[in-house]
Length: 249
Ligand SMILES: NC(=O)c1ccc[n+]([C@@H]2O[C@H](COP(=O)([O-])OP(=O)(O)OC[C@H]3O[C@@H](n4cnc5c(N)ncnc54)[C@H](O)[C@@H]3O)[C@@H](O)[C@H]2O)c1
Image (cartoon, rainbow, N blue to C red):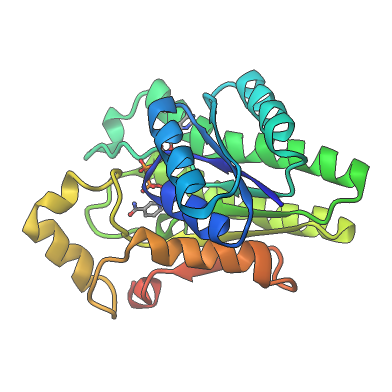
């Protein structure tokens, strides 16, 4: 099996790469930050002895996505798993300050790219009778708005991704292709490392979940692995991996 993993050079990307590699899956580590992708791919090869390649891609550009898809298939063999993990988060305290560029950036990476990657997968898998699986990384921000969150572009893009997941689930289910999503709350990664340096922010995040702790990326990767490989009758679903946070909002 081969995985097309976007944002593979990031915090959750690395955890997902290792979790799937442990199950013998070859990993295409797709990222605009190619040095990070190379580091993750090398770590995976060394630790698990499976094939792993770093693939440069700017997800804002559909031609770049198509080239990355082709390269990954050529290097690893046909892709049968997708994790749309890449995401960008640039909160602005006041929505009145959001520019067209801010809005389009969030939508391009967090919503448009997962659509196009999923469409490429659908075309190839339906043509070849592949019963592939897609997992999208959404967020609790798709469903709920935490106090002081201030990221309307991010929340809207992730809500769109949840909608997309349901439509893919229904449209591709007849071909034996499953599509699901996870909604993480806060987990430790480069995306929030700066914010979580502040003990007050840590306390705030901890207080928001019944488990009273911030998750680790490996706990998200375990849920993604379940949806991609083991949950063979789960389709079109959003799995909250949030310690119960959304129940309290
Ligand atoms: N960290 C959290 O607390 C948290 C909470 C909820 C959801 N999420 C979601 O989890 C996913 C992974 O986030 P993370 O915390 O690992 O963040 P991260 O910043 O460590 O990783 C994101 C990766 O996406 C890549 N990326 C960004 N723009 C790209 C582009 N245009 N083309 C290609 N790659 C690009 C980055 O280079 C990076 O490697 C994201 O979708 C994020 O929205 C994170």
